[in-house]
Amino acid sequence: MTESDWIKQIKARGLGGAFGVLLDIIEPLGPLGAQILWVAQPTMRVFGAGETLGHMAQALEEPGGIERIRSLLNDVDVTNDANDINDDARE
Figure 1: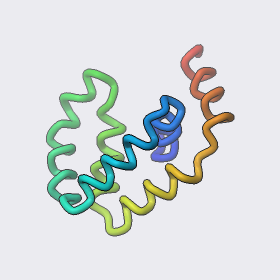
Figure 2: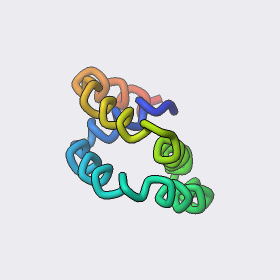
Figure 3: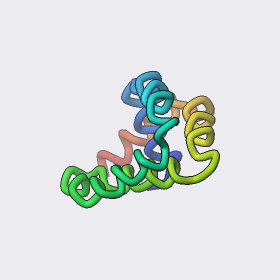
Figure 4: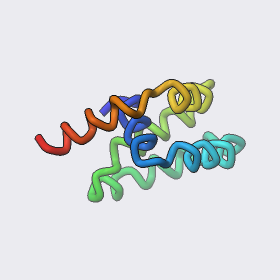
């Protein structure tokens, strides 16, 4: 799953706005938040969210990572991508 894939899933579920607010809250603590996500990642693999947390942690650690996620949130087309997600779920 690529970074844009989990952004598409967030937007398809109607959580784009809430995720944007979350980014605003955690941005000042980016590196610390990334370390917390790296620690939680093995546990979250049980629930199928390990890879997503890894992408989020990597974005928080990288300079400009949060801005890249914000731009993806604004650029992703949900209408076509929601159909892709449903097709993937059927397979």
